[in-house]
Amino acid sequence: MEAVLKQYGGGDYALPPLTEWEVTLTGSVPCDSFSVTCPYRPDMAGVLERAYRVRLTEAGRFTLNAVVDEYEIVQDRKGRFLTVRGRGLAALLLDNESEAVEYLRPTLSELVRTHAAPYGITWEAFPEVRGEQSYGVASASSQWKAISGFTHRFGGFEPRITPAGVLQLYPWKKPAAAWAVGAETPVAELCWRDRRYGVYSEVLVVDKVRKTGQRVTNDAFLRRGGCCRRVLYTPGRSAAPAMGEIGRAQLRQSARGARTLTVMLPFLPAVLPGGVARMDRGDIGVTGEFFVEEIRALRDSRGTRCSLTMGRLENGCGYPND
Image (cartoon, rainbow, N blue to C red; front, side, top):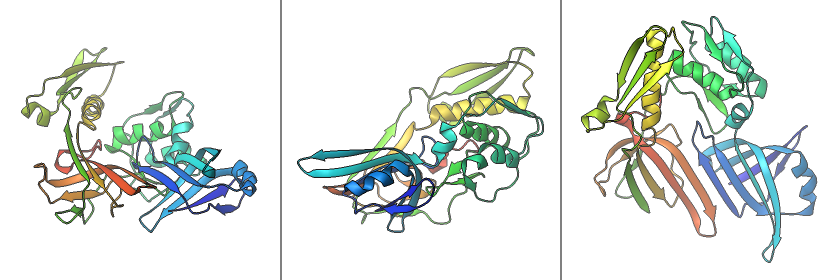
């Protein structure tokens, strides 16, 4: 992996060959993160003072543009080493808070111009989304929440951000090809986890003013014998579609990460979060297509290792429109 520091005010500085590195890619929240270590030289001191971004490139597999959160210089019996840590560019939207604002005729374009563009975030072309009702951003909400709250409510999808730091503001689509894990793949470890506790089978959303309610159910969980009901109260005068979306969002959040497959590999796979992996081996009786939620890769004195955290594609891929 190659690491280049970008200095505030201009200028790039390529770090010496890395002795260790670790990268976690999610494409969402919590955002991507990294840690890289290399030999340290005294002439780096001035560069580090102005380092505020980093670009990591791994053999054409991905490029991570990220924020420099911290660095440390350590001297011990092995020598002097520099470690730089940080997060993907989604951190710029998570770290910055919005003022309270009310949009009467909201559009996704307006939200992006107001809450993403000022922080240097770029985005892919996206179909316009218009709100049928007014949309409010609460004081001290993060800029990410301002945008994702709108896409959840009016578009039914979760925004994503690529490792390069580009926003994707449209519903997820299944890629044309899936990365395959077959009998020939040198899998170091497989772990299938099925958590029942905390998963909601039903959410009842109640309008306190109108005394009306809307029931939303997790049918797949109910068919497995799940039984966990929650009741939510809205401030009042909530439209039926909005109440339904509130309930569905609660169901999805409770089920997130409940059924996951983790695969440990001795190499970096040709897939990124948001992609699809096809399991063609029945070591533990779990096969089929899986949505890749997180990739954690590292390299140290023991070599390269990578873990993929995935959810069954047919059970939804963690997006509110599933």
